[in-house]
Length: 267
Image (cartoon, rainbow, N blue to C red; front, side, top):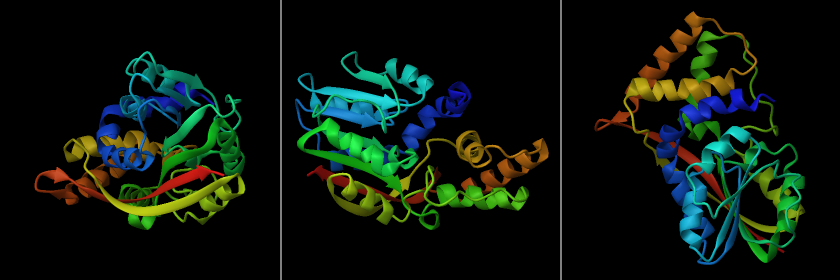
């Protein structure tokens, strides 16, 4: 994997993405209910916004460790989190964490990308203390998330034969129907509750800039491995701008969204 190439669009759009997804992060942190002095493991920490929130929640007596498989994202996060936060470049599914080290595991849109979900949650289970807990967010179904569904429809309008994501494979929409996620957690030693929440995403920019963010991240991800001409990309971007314009409310672009909030305790 060329991690520099993979990470580039996420780094370029980091500020816009973090502001757009802030309601999801706030929902995650509320579900995690981190307390002063706790040891926290952040899975798929990316550019670091949840690391900063967790470090603030646990205070100087607590400890936060962030894990991400992409070295450029960890490097970026290092420059914006407290020195007390430990960062690890690793696959959380297989990394040898210190047993019973953490009070809590958190993950904001990170668990949808494990190659083997049950194995990953079993590995995380042994990393938490007895009675330790997990809080994670995953996307709901595409039908409830125009942020993903409309870009995909636009792609299909301009590019022939783009294969749809395969069910139960790593990707953002993997747990839109969360029964498999619940089963994987229960099979690996967690008791689980999943709550579905409607949230509102409000990108901070005008339509052209939001469309550019979607081109960098969402469209690029959906078209990975597909040959696309410059005229097709221009047509896709034009349609995205129209979509963003149509999503404006009182001068701000608003995307309704649905997420699943996972809370679990180690048994």
